[in-house]
Image (cartoon, rainbow, N blue to C red):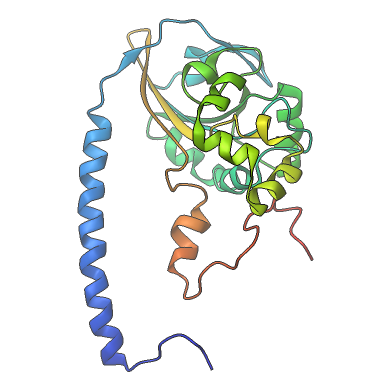
Length: 245
């Protein structure tokens, strides 16, 4: 017998109607957030960045592939990661390919960034079967300039990060074994989205959001939160080829 409350159809309908009011208020607030996000000022990118891609060196402007908007996700895969990218970022990235054509048809180029060298990104992309462009910010200051990574000094100066490094919870210690990096290095990568616009030859930075904004993976923040049972305790995310039998 389930330990969850069991009721009549009428009790369910009443509770569902109360929940619908909260969902409607949440949707209305989200519309306000979207408007404010688009109202952010655009900042010209004055520094020249050159990235490593599987097609060779490319500037930030060239990553747009002729479109006027560039949206990127920064996958936690630092140069010190010996075993691959963050499993949470990896599971999120597993869902990107299906949206590529829809974004491209709406004048948006979508890519992913990571700080690991391009040869490791290319190998990981092949392992995961990804099709989206995967760009290395290795040997550039791009990730640091745009808040997508921390220097060693910066990480030590943030109390919350330092506390996790000094006394990590079990799940985070396990995560470190998954990526093959010490936490002092692993936690310097910031998972997040960053957006740019290009008009009249000028590239503008328009938006950035990094964790802990709740965007980790579609099956976590959209699908699984609509299922009847909560997530079990313990590690929640594995790479798709590493789930325990």
